[in-house]
Length: 365
Image (cartoon, rainbow, N blue to C red; front, side, top):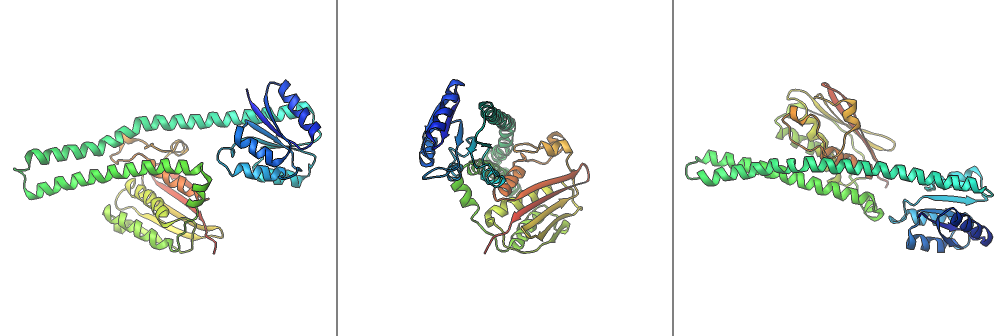
């Protein structure tokens, strides 16, 4: 049974609404003022809230603002029911996150239709979220064990050779085996770190305090950080001459460690999925809103279908390519950028090029 909280200071209206909703099969709660409404919402977590605007102690806008700031009540469907029906009132309510705005007096049919619409929309969103979660679980179940086993098998296999044949190996052979073990260990470490980071970001997205702390970071000289990260990757790949940089500086709202993760993951992909001798270009442009970073390569590219399906734990056409990686890096970069109020878009032509464009907000002060 769906539970509805009615926050209305006029007793006759409140009781009429509660009676109507009870007859329609809903479980109901009533609050005579905004403060009590917030307390009941926090205590009982109703499935939907009907709320007047003009009330003592806390008005409807303050009730909505308070509930939207708390993770437990932030997603509860919220319908304003008020005699204040101007366009300005409607716009203010919607901008604050209200789901609907009904003007009193309204008929029972209008009210019930609005409630039904909110529940239908909520069910659709929940179904989409569940489908995405099921898809992610499926991808994790298929991909993560493989990704973990690959470097782990390298470590076990090479170390076994070293243990069994160490008396017969030349120093150079020992060095090569040790380097192989170290490389596999680094891959395994990075995979685990990325997995934990992705999980952390998903938790942060649903926690207002964590999100506020995440967004408090700043980078004063992004061009220096981008240059350092991109140059290190180009050198590691033996493609220093392929790297092209055209960078500008402005203070942006993301910490240096988080920006480093974004640049590392995307630049690493640009080199990984393009061939030696083709350029990888990183360029930044200062905008009125902050900074735009573009990372372009002339590699294998992606189809429109692949771009639409891009997500965590997905690497396209694995069987045709030698590069290792779960595709989690792109998902992490995208999530980090979005949590900082920016955007990440990918444009690609199969067999020709891929261009990733990131916008990050500027930092005030």
